[in-house]
Length: 67
Image (tube, rainbow, N blue to C red; front, side, top):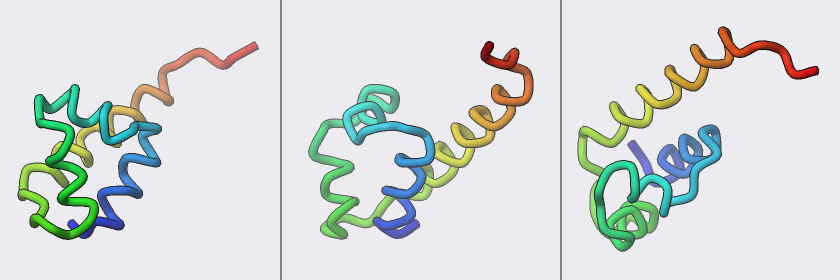
């Protein structure tokens, strides 16, 4: 996963980096280092974000339409 992929996944989910940190119990500096390319993004991150995106898409299928 590239820093651009990381940003794109967060944007699609509507998350800020702080949201990601809160949900994954990572420090606020960690995703910042990934986003700038200073530190490689660990292999679990794309899997986590992919799972979150799939859940978001599935939830959209069962949510009642907004009136």
